[in-house]
Length: 185
Image (tube, rainbow, N blue to C red; front, side, top):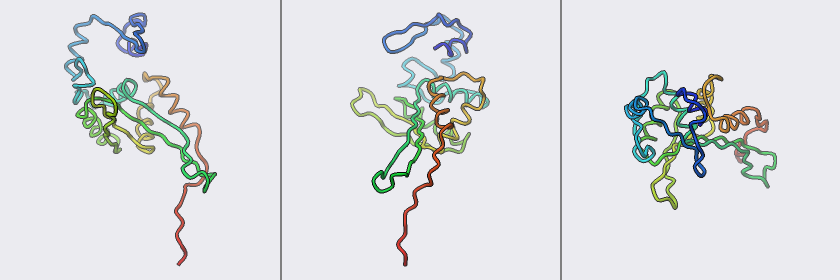
């Protein structure tokens, strides 16, 4: 919230904690009209489609979407521990969450055009009152995406998510990849 308020030139004392969420209340009609003009509306997660933003600001928008409605996971996977105890696979996944599949398909298309990466929109609606979707990227697409999002060290970012990316970059796995053995002829 402090980063958001700094980006729009407001003091960090203009927000409050409301349960598990932080909220900022602004009385800026010009900012409201500008945000509405870009495609942001009330109940944004249910209604959002494409967001009109100049091409040079697209990755800044993506970083904001990632910080606000995204997630990142990084862990070491040991898929066949008994058979290959030294085989490790470092996983990295980036997801953008929304109740609007239209928005996620738009984002998927724009990221494919901008970075040549492929992602999948998946339904995550189990036990939820509204349909929920995620645009998810696997390891190498996530690496391409995060490299571009965090290219400029001066850009605003959510520190918690950036630290997960830094942890991934700092700990390479040195074991060789698993290769399926073929039977001799």
